[in-house]
Image 1 (cartoon, rainbow, N blue to C red):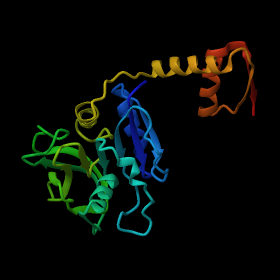
Image 2 (image 1 turned 90 degrees about the horizontal axis):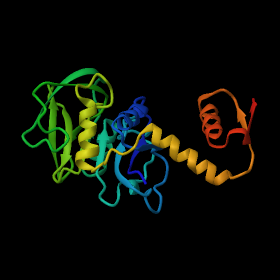
Image 3 (image 1 turned 30 degrees about the horizontal axis):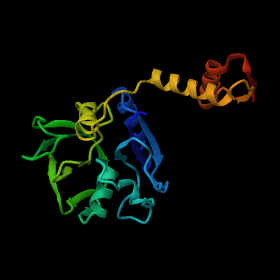
Amino acid sequence: MHQLIVILDFGSQYTQLIARRFRELSIYCEIRPCTEPAPAELPAGTIGVVLSGGPASVVGPDAPPFDAGWLRDDLPVLGICYGMQWLAQTLGGRVDRGAAREYGLARIDVTELPGPVLDGLAPGHRVWMSHGDHVAVVPPGYRVAARSSSGTIAAMVRDDGRVTALQFHPEVAHTEAGSRLLERFAVGVCGARRDWTPGSFVDEHVAALRARIGEGSVLCALSGGVDSSVVAALLAKAIGKQLVCIFV
């Protein structure tokens, strides 16, 4: 069984990029909508949770509902943009509305105790911002980990280092060494073994399909889109001539 990082999607245009970056690091992850209720037990092998960015305001009426049960069991958490603001607002900090949206390249400087994800970053580290609101006061038990050149809180970290929140987006190419920051979270904080590859995903699902279908036949409605084409390709690899595809 592979370890799992759960990415909870608050509507960011970059959520798929977060997943791609982890998968490039050979770490398995799954994206779930932020509105999905937390299960009675978290998926087997879950080692960390990521809260994505999003277009809503945590202090506005359009903030999406979120089940904090996803954050139980003291799993490591990485909050990105909206995710950072949700953590601050929910845990007793304060989020203020920005007078204007900050969008584009920015420079940050880490504090003396930045935590395991940001430790060692050179002054003026380049990042990509995309936010309106900002964290004005960090919650109890947290400290400021980095500030932007304008003085805005750019990151915060829980005192034990197991929860880190970033106002910027490490998943985009514009953020300098962004993949390294995600790797520090996944490997350094969550303890990911880096044992997943796209090839292993195919092999595991082909084996599971063969075991489930046996000698039976399968009728697949194939539209030519990504989803149905991937399903058809996996089925063809698993059962060959037992598969009949109908173009719809």
